[in-house]
Length: 107
Image 1 (cartoon, rainbow, N blue to C red):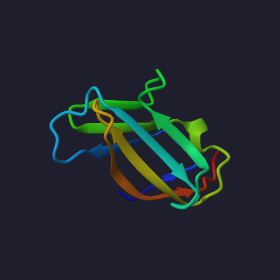
Image 2 (image 1 turned 90 degrees about the vertical axis):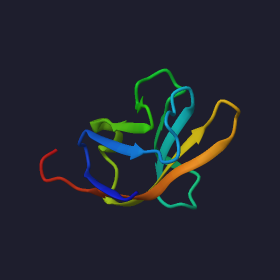
Image 3 (image 1 turned 120 degrees about the vertical axis):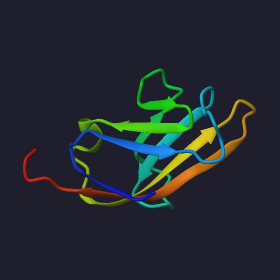
């Protein structure tokens, strides 16, 4: 799932998980990095850290990017990935794609 956003904006990234009715009770992680081969994450969000960075509504996952998450990042194309770990510990990659971060005139 490719998307574009502007540096320093608040943004909600919505994923509809196909083939399941409910992802409540699972662990969801989302991350963005400079490339799919990079192990260094530019942004990282998770449901297991006690914060409300990721919302789950049935089979819909909403990753909330807040202004500070992208402020100061270089405008360019990043790789992003969404991962689910079910209650049995099985890991599935639900989505991958490009995040195009654009610069803004007003900061």
